[in-house]
Length: 338
Image 1 (tube, one colour):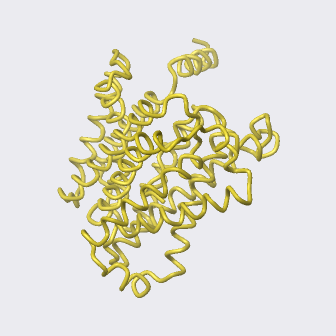
Image 2 (tube, rainbow, N blue to C red):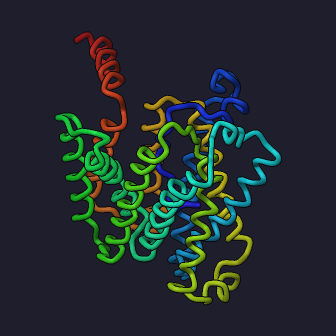
Image 3 (cartoon, rainbow, N blue to C red):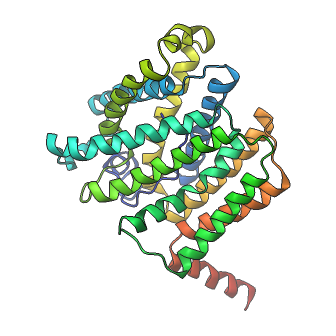
């Protein structure tokens, strides 16, 4: 559905993952490593497919592509509700028309804008460079949270913000095929995504919605909003050339991969700790950069490698609770006899 699947930020195990993995989180029934590998494969596949479709197949209609994904997700979540237990979490959500209009629609609009701008970036930027820029998302979220009064800067977060910002800036400086238009699109995508995540904290307090339940509500809203934009910004051309340039099989595979990614996230949340989620996201980002270089011929300079390494290290520290990091340092020192 999206151009990227960001690292899940959910801490509560969803009803769906409990029901399908077992009450103990599924650790005795499904090895977390399999779930992580499937999530990484699906997430990477969606991004590479979107880039290939938009650039290599010359289908330069990101709004249409995003809308198709969202329509597919709208239908898919309804089918899951009818035939599976993956959306049992819906029974825990008290949704009224007033809440839908005041909370779901605004967040859906931000989600829609984020998806469109992220896909627009693929028209001019390489997958590897986009992944490097996306490391700045956590900084944007933190900054927006501070502005909205939901968080505060402290010495630790300020240091991490500086490290990530310097790393991303260094990666951008080292980009050979820099396109300012694509750079702006990606920044707008990050900004809208950060605003969306903060708006969820502000507007949906008290609601427990796992990724699939969220998709159940947001997908039709986003699809409707995007459908209004297609005639204005892309006209009827995407409808006329989609079968010729992309083909129905690849379009369906692309949408199916994106939808399966959302299902994989539910299982991932149910069987992995916060540290494992963080490290999984970092591994996925590194593999995507390598995949972009090997499969799509992207060029990554030494300056970018250094900058991205700094940004990723900052991300790990930022997303990992201080007590977890401290515990690992204590174990390391004990192992080394220090």
